[in-house]
Length: 263
Image (tube, rainbow, N blue to C red):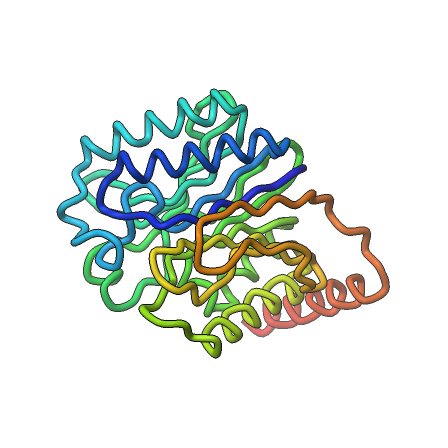
């Protein structure tokens, strides 16, 4: 599968966000991509960093935005992983929505690791965040969840082959130390769970997490330019289990079974 990830600076104007998403989708389609990943809250801007606050994001505007994303996925024949605020049964979530290449909404994943502003404004999600796309098992996680290995161990147990991690993790000034730390987390999550990882960050400020692709051995095979709008494209096939990969998987299975017995 040919993957793409598009970094751009989201904000409170949904039409401007959709215009940027269209640029990314057209470029991804022209490059032959089957799947396009977008940053956290790409549709509406991440509050309060990119948009004033969650209360200003109205459900009726989001529904129009979701319809536009569905049409775009259908027009460009893309599987589209798009971040947005989402309302359901009176609750507000920080979500990733998956639209199929026919424009259908295949599901949503709601952020579960909440802290600070997120905790005050969003409900905690409950879905596992695992989707089957073109014969591949794909997981998705959102920003702060990268800090918690348990979130990614779930994907290993679900036999995910790829994880998409979306961010709006930016700073007002360059922060190379934070960027290095977050990339180390990304490499580790890929390596310890024997799965590839595609990260996508917004660029409304200086990025403190990269838009990049890491294989199941934690190697960075592709990167988008830092701190500016741009597209990453990378072909993905699940790795054949070599000596190192088999060793990590067999020992992971051992420790998981040992932990289950102790419980």
